[in-house]
Length: 476
Image 1 (spheres, rainbow, N blue to C red):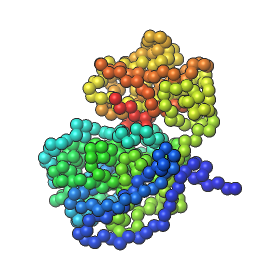
Image 2 (cartoon, helix red, strand yellow; image 1 turned 60 degrees about the vertical axis):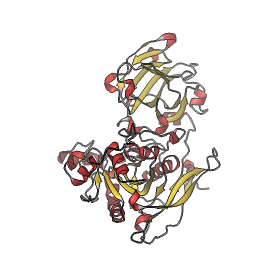
Image 3 (cartoon, helix red, strand yellow; image 1 turned 30 degrees about the vertical axis):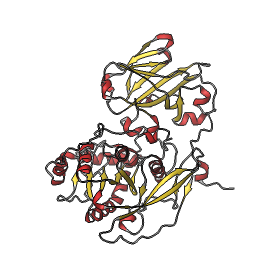
Image 4 (cartoon, helix red, strand yellow; image 1 turned 90 degrees about the vertical axis):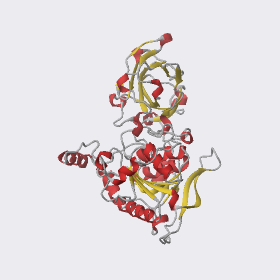
């Protein structure tokens, strides 16, 4: 019997007929149908959609438009954004007309808006008395995500361009005098900024000040990219939710950075659905743009799938080849049987592990020591791609100091370890430890591991905050 791709991958699929909604009446509250993913019963793995109808007062609502840049290093990302940016613009116009405030947040582009009335308005918002201590920082994980299994591998940056097209795109960006890695300079011209009413800011503290000064209790988030900036920016969903703001993501006006050549090896839009399901289950509910604009939710013309909404995907650990093909989630310390979910009981030869740690400012960048329960002759380690010099420690361990220049404070730092294992060594039966001043942290919990050997595995193309999921971030 022929099996579907979804069945082969262990995907859960849900679908419903599209309903055409009339445009809401002028002056009406936003009538929103919030969608979440719930597990019932708890621990069963049985996921389903759940809905809640709410009415939001536009005067107490803000729309944040995240990182809808004029250009991007990924040409396909530009194409997808340009497809739904006009719909973002229509949503912003409607929300503005009903009394909501619009905050344009094109990160790294503030110099282009120096002196713009909307930028000045954001800068002049009075400092809030309840400004959260860490609101200016990137947020890699919130407590509700601590037990989450992140659904995609984005460690390559998620770029899904055709290689030939991408090479041509890089040359076009260079010809415009732009850095091909970070070519954005402004927000997309497809989204209008009202200089008399709107705000422009990419700073978490400024956005918080705006929300408090205007009495905003709820936020509608749209823009890109869901699995990176929409979640993690200082003004992103995680920061809003953990600081008590009711927030929703507009699921048809967002996109993720996901490369189908990476796990779970599904098409781009299925990857996007998986990220949205993660958001709905662990971070915030979602809505669709038709709830404000009427009509139907936007469906991308690049999306050639049947109408389906993916909830989850199982991790395909079926044989040793799978342990060599991709990074696999595990929890350390553990023996080989647990590390490999029963696929192997021993390993002789090289294997790699990686995770990330958010290093607090209080630690500083100097003198942070790492203790690895393996001899230096068999071990190499890197922090954010910079080699850690290891020396023999007590009882057969390796010790080293994290390279000062590589440490990023108040942010995720990628830690990668390569070990030449000997038969019978038991895997990783003891925890890797970090020591900073008076603090000792045992890195017990989420890691990824991979059998085989490739020098490129010592780093990822983007900073850890972009490439590593929340299930791999230790937060002392």
